[in-house]
Length: 139
Image (tube, rainbow, N blue to C red; front, side, top):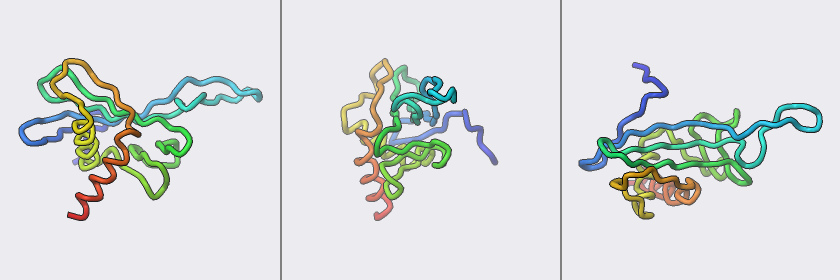
């Protein structure tokens, strides 16, 4: 059965359930000297993992923006793939990756009971999440 891409998925951690989804967005567009449309700045592409504790008001937005040494889907990488090089990637569509990023955010002090949405630079969680994914695959 095929799932709807825009419908949030569920992740259960202990007694808590989170709804999560992945989105891709682009920064502003301008014209270059030749008149061609181009995206400007490091905001050109970004991938966002959104988590919300079921039944609670707050949430977490983990955003991965492209830039030097930071890869996000841009037509070459598959949807949801972020990384620092082709040998260091995470797939945000995998529940294990979502769990690893959630665990990193919780360890970093994110409070799922806070009533407001928290915004986090995903690159600050990236290495820890990769380590957690590697440890999970080995064990």
